[in-house]
Length: 247
Image: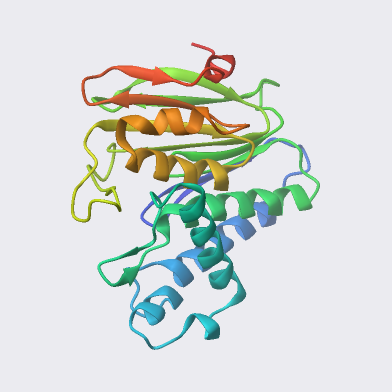
């Protein structure tokens, strides 16, 4: 059972290949993503994050999930030597980790229902478990940042997450927080593979902001691999990345 819906400004796909999959399980995942959007969207005037930015609500008054996101953001800032920062120009924007966090939580909902074989994707970032409909690990393509219609690498994910930060859809939009106002232009695409999507997503965002040094930052982390394409079209990858590659 597989469905794709446009939510949070992007396509979101949920697929469960277990024979016991139900429409209700799929619907519940999409209802969860709708709640995430209503709570964390900086584009919605009455979302919780907008009320915090408008100083209509303090963080102490915020919901437990909001406080958890702020705590995760602060931990990520420390883990990445300040290259991940949700505060900019007087406003908070936690979108750099909310997507991965939401994907992971939606996938956890499927696991809690007893499913073993599924994936949840939002905007190209994926949490996968088990195998696909052909009994094989889930296949994920990494797009060429110079040509969205070309796949440069296909990787296999059985139980884990994969996230890409890049210029595919939104163009150059990630800033180096250490040089305010300066877009990161050295790297066009950086993909991170790890045991879960919320770590892969937040680390991919931070590593992308580091520019050409991002892939070396990931190299030093246990349990994560990365594939980076720079503005000259040169690919650099971590020492263990190729074990995921099918082609």
